[in-house]
Amino acid sequence: MRVRHLFLVLIATIISCKKPYLPPVINSSANYLVVEGVINSGQDSTIIKLSRTVMLSGKTTAKPELKASVRVENDQSAVYPLSEIGGGEYAVAALSLDNTRQYRLRIKTAGGKEYISDFAAVKINPPIDSVGFIVQNKGIQLYLNTHDPDNNTHYYRWDYKETWLFHAKYGSAYVTNGTAIVSRTSAQNITTCFGNEESTSILLGSSAKLKEDVIYQNPITQVAAISEKLESKYSILVKQYALTQDAYNFWVNLKRNTEQLGNIFDAQPSTANGNIHCITDPTEPVIGYISVTNVQQKRIFIVNSQLPQDWVPTYPYSCELDSAFFCRGTPCYQNDVAEFMIPSGSTEIPVNAIYSGPVVIGYLGSDRECADCTIRGVVKQPAFWK
Image 1 (cartoon, rainbow, N blue to C red):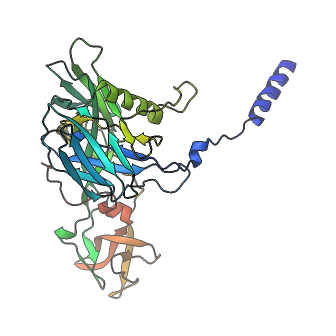
Image 2 (image 1 turned 30 degrees about the vertical axis):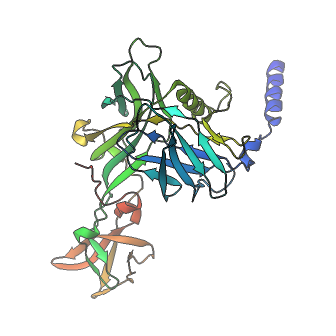
């Protein structure tokens, strides 16, 4: 009993000695430039995104760098200017660069600071062989295959964009026009939408330790069996970038610092040294690595019929239908310009009419989250959809 008592006292002492630790980085006011993107040497656009770091404790989550001058330069002084397209992004149409030359990025901010990346040779990127998926117990695992027959690439990075067709829980057949509830036209569809999501994790692969430059079934992402992404039809566009060993090491380090920290067994954070420098203030850190490569991409579609029939997507909101009845030909409630008002005062969307014989005596309505897919997606079908 005495040993047990001492043990409990020891545990209580350890717990009471805990103190919250708030690292200085949380309130750091550092305003470092972040450069994202690649110089695309092939037949697609080059898009560079500029932003500034923000305080972890602040309310601002994004700080785009606006009104900068951005251009690509080669080692023979040729210049390819990029145009600002909004949100801190700068772009130029297909450059079709000479693979025998070297290229760099030059940035001059509205505040007068100037940044350049190191000159880099064009890294030839082999095509993606295939993108596929494996059905697992709890969803699907998407993967990628690629190889370089010339055995020259070895280091790869990928990102992706998902698009899926989904429906609101209830299809709304009616809409208010400001004075009455009328039938909804096809142009007023809010039942069928397209959702989009881009990758947020760093996806890397290397064949450097293999005899052949082959990447086989490299995991890209997973989609849960209950996800509404798989409700009807799903598509993923995967983009592939060829990296130098230095670029690969930068991304490995950045992944370790941003995605693989959190417990005592993880590696300690370390500096992710990029190839971009501030020439007006050489001591200022810059976050990013500019590679020069042709970007390869491949898209696949997955329809619900390809998946187990007992997979049922879970709707993200709790939904139910409410009824509202007319009183002697006059509504018992007031119509709002764009919404259906039930007697309780909560705003809803009219879904279906309630009939007594041939006469409409009221309507069933539901919350916007349950009857309007546009709060989470867009109605317009993407040009690539088939």
